[in-house]
Length: 168
Image (cartoon, rainbow, N blue to C red; front, side):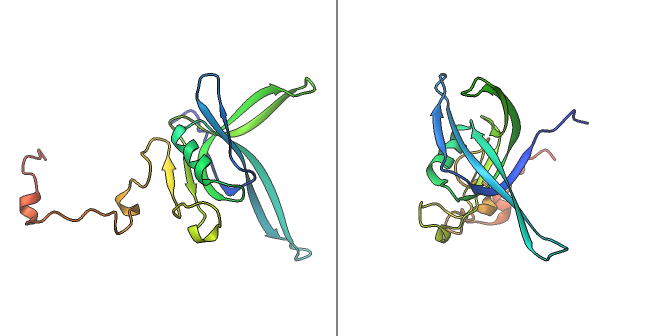
């Protein structure tokens, strides 16, 4: 059994446009906040209630950072997978503070845009565009490809296409 797991999955809306910073090492970090809202109806009053949680997100993955920078705007609905990471810093008054962020590491994490193309006035992206930390740009699964992206089946009989040198 594994010793521990540190995984966060969020679906929410961006609270601000992504901000890009360059570290002294030359690596880029994309940061933004995501709001997740829980809704319920109060049993006693029947009144609808909401509770919103704000999550700071930092993307160290170059490909995911480019997608966030290019396509995400305040209000965009996204799905993301990352890890919790706590950092310590000194505020402007000299007080020691701690902050916990959702971090998408260099070779890990996932970011999926959930807004439909017609549902937004800004940006020209395809609905459900997804990028995983270890994959290539775009849709990699044959099931996710559109009809124009599917490869045609090769001509000829199926028996001619099979390889007889398979050892099992």
